[in-house]
Length: 283
Image (cartoon, one colour):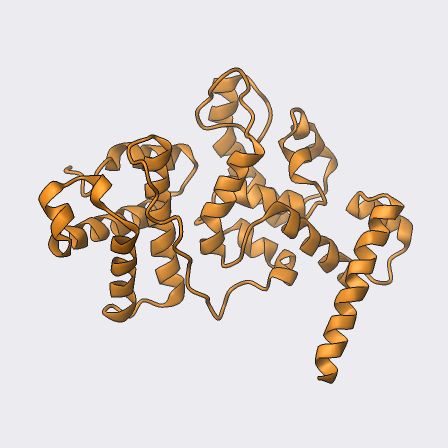
């Protein structure tokens, strides 16, 4: 079967290695085939040269504007198209096939149904079943809701913590999906850990914080909120404290894995949040 865009076979192989599901891979292929078909017909420079280097930020913007104005794509669909394009060009950039990233400065469309950043933990069951999101993105959000930091999750030996954590039925189902995804990586690296590189470079098979950020950044448009570890941890802490205001200090410290000074810090943040909400209500 003929490829419909440059480096399709190797890009699809990378998507599979990253644990993307078949429907998501198909979305990538459809978006990219359509994009390159559009460029072939409406981008004279690229049509003449067939060089990826001739595709610019303006070309991507023009294509997205066409989707919005002529095909009347909804913001959510438009953002998914941008996310697919960004994933493809990021792959080319990381493999030094191109030297610039044409999607770098392009931001997604605001959406009426974007997740409420402050209350995202309550949507975790839905997030865990969203196969548009990478397994590592969903695993990070699950473990954030178990009060672990990104540094703790990525540390060698963290897998042993999983047997100490209570999980719901939905979370258990996701962990089975994770096991299916991670087993080939564990076998190839000889490591029992759960955050492992797709391609090992050097002697350390563990995923770095910078690499985790790439997965999170790639999924932020699909999920409809910024995925920044520090901000997500803080929003989880404030959400939990808001939902459990009558719990004892000892129970809260145990559940959130905090010492007293750290708990005081987040409780002060919650009080400030309450004051701002009260002020806005009076205004």
